[in-house]
Each structure stands twice: as structure tokens, then as C-alpha cells.
Amino acid sequence: MSIQRFIAVTLLLALPPASVYMVKQTSWGPILAAPTTRQTGDPKAKVVIVEYSDFQCPSCAKLDPFIHQLLETYKGKVRLIYKYYPLTKIHKNAMPSAHAADCAALQDRFWPYHDRLFQTQASWENLSDPTTSFMAIAQESKLDIPKFQSCYADPARVAVIEQDAEEAQARQVSATPTFFIGDERLVGQVMASDGARTIEKALRQ
Amino acid sequence: MNVKNILLIITRVAVGAVLLYAGFIKAIGPSAEFAAILEAYKLFPPSFLTPLSVAVPYVEMWAGLFVLTGLYTRQAFFAAASLFTIFLVALASTLVRGIDLASCGCFGPDALSPRYTMILDAVLLALSLVSSNLAKLPPPLSLDRALPKI
Image (tube, rainbow over all chains, first blue to last red):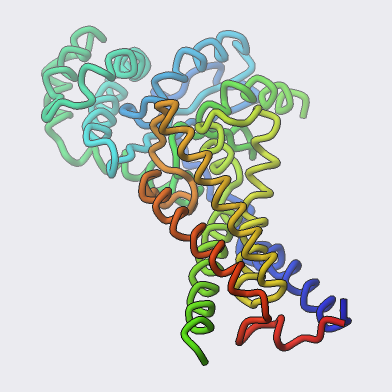
């Protein structure tokens, strides 16, 4: 190999890592405070898990029982914060379901509503108007129905959801569910395989 | 410049640009996002996901750069063809196994349906194989032609 070729090969090999190093975002935007109604676990817990999720996402529904199990295993040690990230391009009922859940959050019944949305996902995900299903879940979750209805009819609540979604985008979240445990990002089913190990690591720090 | 050489240049730009873009867009994003997409293929053990999610974008970028600049052009086209073959087999296996991938992850978060990606991969694979054959002599406008071998 001639010296010119050697230099050219070296430059071509070095170019991708160098350009990625210059462009790659290495720190994520801040996580804004979420209302306590969308948090569960010990408020003073050492480890905070932030979840960006979509109620119409099948992976989110599939992972939900595992998250419950994880919270039970690390009771008193972890706190979970739920953030809305409705993938409206591919899930037509993602925004209405997040809106309904936020109305439940206003009545401090977010978590039962959240669980039922995931458990019944298959029954409402393809409906052209899922309102009846969301009302039924509101009744099951023992919500004040007139209050829920007036909140669900108020488009202003969507701003809260959009704020979470903007935060997710600023943090380069593109899939749901995405979890942050400290600086560690776990996407989708990777949470099931690596979640416990990552929590243990965060607890040791 | 004859038609063969013009085609070779067009092919180099097309194959090189696609590989460079696909690799770069994945490399600058969080590798955990790509690892999650790889997990959905259900082809790799969990311990391979993170190393693969970091390595694949760089391999794509290197192959793309060598094809584009025309340095070791035949070998670069062969590497590109190998990559397209691997991507095609991986995507086809998800169709056979009934795995519904929302996005193949080929271009990072930009969701391109796996079927369209398979067509693109097949076209680029064919172009790479033909060009690898055509590039027996140093192609025009290439580093292979500009730089001495010894």
C-alpha cells in the first residue's frame, strides 16, 4: 500500500467517528416536574424512573405488568413518573386516551385509570370514537363522571400532554415506552431484560 | 466517458449516499433507540444488542464512504452488498415469522415500512453486485484512479 493510500484509508476511517463526535447530543434536556398524581412509589426514593408512554402502544401495555412487579420488588427504593408521549402519527386514539387519563389525574385517580386503559387497549384502540369506552373506564375507576366529562370536553387539557411530548422529543425519544433511570435510557422490552440491573446500579451509586 | 463509467459513478453516489445517511442518522441518535429496534427482530441475544447498535452504523458509514470516494471500490461494493444481504435476510425473516415491525430502524427514527426498505435493499444489492463487477479497473473520479497502488 502506498503512503498516499494509507493516509486516505486512515482519513476515511477517522471521518465517521469524528463527525459523529461533533454532532451527537450527549446530554438530554431537563425533565420537567410532573404532578404528584402521575407519580407512584416512595416520594423520597433514591431512584427515579421516568417513563414516556403511549396508551395505545402495544409494547407499553405488554410491559405494564412488569413495571408493577418492578415497583413491588423495589418498594420504598424507586419512584415512577409517568409522562405522556402519544404517537399520534400511528395511533389515532393515543391523544384521546392520554386526555382521558389526564382527566383522571385531575381527580387523583390516574393510576387505576392508567391500568384499565392498558388492560382494555384492544377494545378501544380501533374505535372511531372511543369516548364511550373511556367513560366506562371512568365509572370503573370511580371518577366523578360530570367532572370527567367536562374535563374530557375541554381541549385546553391537551396542552399538558403536548408539553410532555415536546419534552420527550427534546430528549430524542422516538419510541414508546422509553424509560430513563438517571442518565440510562431503556427503550421498549429492553426494560424487561435490563431494568432490574439498571435500578440496582443506580441504588449502588 | 462511456455509459458504463457514468453508470458506475451514479451507482457509487446512490449506494454510498444511502449507506452514509443510514449510518450517520443512527450513529448521532441514542444507541438505546436502535438497540430496541434490533430487539424487535428477535434475532440476537440481549447481550449483543448494545454492541450491535453501536457498531452497525459505523460499518455502514465506512462502507458508504469507501464506495463514494472510490477507494478499494470493488471491496467496498462487496462490503455494501454483504450489508444489504444481511438487512434483506433480517427483514425477510420478520415477515416469515409474522413479526410486525413498525419501523425497520434502517434510517433511525424515520419510519420507513419494512416492505419498502426490502425493495430499496434489493435494488441497492443488485447495483452493488453489478458495480463490483464493473469496477475491475479503477473507476473514473475515484481515489483508486488518483492514488498509486504501491
